[in-house]
Image 1 (cartoon, rainbow over the protein chains, first blue to last red):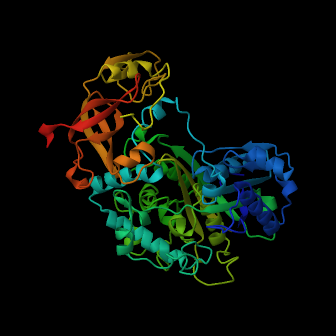
Image 2: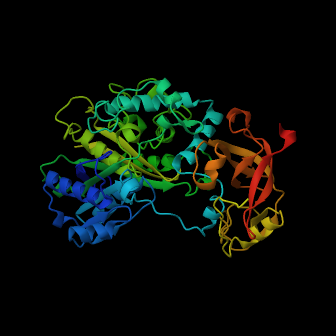
Image 3: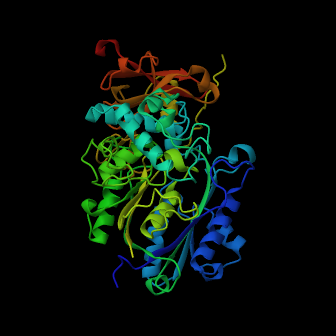
Length: 396
Length: 140
């Protein structure tokens, strides 16, 4: 048996309440609700889970669940960690160490403002890279990613307005997803369709990034189960095969990023395609981490979905939109669906739903975002365009 | 006025840099084997993995690789917003991050990538002088 396809994602589920809940939720609750839901969905008892993969929580989670996993992975290198977890789980299943793996996420990015949590750990203040960058007033992700926008504009002659198309199209997808925070005026006072002018004229956060170039900050919990083929084929759910998986990094601190317009998704993408025996042209769906408009657009370039410097055109020319030739971020993305801080799990859930034909589950059969895609490239980006995990997934 | 922004805490690895900064010198780590300057300070050369690192006094000059505006910030920096963060390609090699002095944050496109800059230090405490960079007149 080859590594490609040695395991499948057999189910994917979310916490009961996501987005901006009225009552604050803890990260632990978000985890557990999602785990219970994916166990019910697949029929795999929680007691059958042999490997636990999450961002730093794995031992607490396993203890809370009352299980004793024989493979414990706490990889936590930003929002792409969950794509890496799938990579690691595939390897562990292929090696015969485990038959069933849980990848779990719970992060109360929104509720943390009231009850604490949030899942971000501070760096070591004595680390040399921290000493040499902490004095300059950076205030979170937007203050770093704005630099990447400036570089892209300078190098390729693009404009922030070009990237605004990403926000507009992604919002269009959100209007088809009732679970999306920005689905409509019913879900959020600023929900529903937006225009280029809305993006360009929204509040400036870190020039040249305005508010609508930036992702949401919400609560989200999600879990996927991964199993070896014999199990995957025996379940009531439809498997989605892990045909390619790879990870890479170019830096941790942006200080060490050589080219602000290029990420390691080029390398992880190439390796994932190679494992799958497929290429960018074979992809019928793309789920690209969109912490910011430019994150998704640059990633599209890195994954060969668009020429260098022209990633934004996938959105501008409508290819990424509903009905387009390459749907991208069909859930409404981190920009308009949900973004808890580490968005990688959201990508996995939507990829599973799309490829298993269940993209409408839990939303009362409302038509819209389900595509006919049979192949999907998923790319998570963590840190400050630092770390990447790429998956090539195939429908059964 | 009391300096009210984050102040780094030196470690043995970085102490020579902060010692130099107190005297207005931009000290840079340089590999004695491959002779390349790297930034930030490391225990091992990131290029050739020699552990024979020495410190040299840099020229304090370089060019703007990249910049952006911080329109919002926290703590002491909030009072200064908007301000301009920048990455500087040093003449000796490798790149530092900084806040640019003497530029107009309200007119972002007036700042030019590639402009020549020179270091200056601001005293933050008895022990810590923080490097900032200023665009040099002749590059305007």
